[in-house]
Length: 280
Image (cartoon, rainbow, N blue to C red):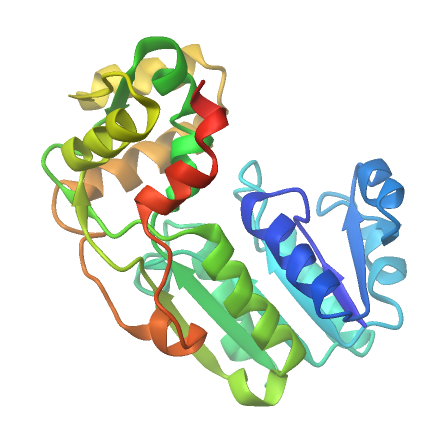
């Protein structure tokens, strides 16, 4: 039995889809599980901020797909405590959705979870994807939809955008075949590094209207996110990640993803084409 956290997120939703297609037994946990119940999934009430929900959520499970909700910054008191309960309840494999660079950067909340996994018992797989193509339909969607622009403080940096659907396939493989992926840390990127000017051109081509890239200043971006009502911690993390793009932190393209999928990874153009209605 697999316990899935973050099933309503970009990757978690696709993980559930893969497990469903492959008829794997799984359970979905979350604060709001009504939608999962309607789709016929086994569900359990679960909240990283309420340790009283941990044991019942993972009872009878031996594998966990773990992802950090964006609003949770203090992972030692939440995700790490959950991991201890899960291990004590019989979970022998954890697939953790981290981020690229988390291993060397203690300021990133995922770092503490990775360290806790490595310091604990065997039976874990860490996925370190770079920037999601889905950011275009999520974090950047309002700017594209309302203002026909990409507005981030990335300068001329290039990004090897990765599609969440590809990440989810790797996660599902690691959940269903733990032995083959145990103890592995996978840094995952998309197949090509694009500038935001090129991404804007792709959006323009596929949406049949002009989308421009407007490089944001750091202060301008902080104010922009603040006006959108994001929590202060999330604003700082999101700004730091995008500023890092100026210095090439997400431009490297690795062949790891293609090797794990045994096929060509999805491109940004394919993502935009498949989800074109998001920006119309």
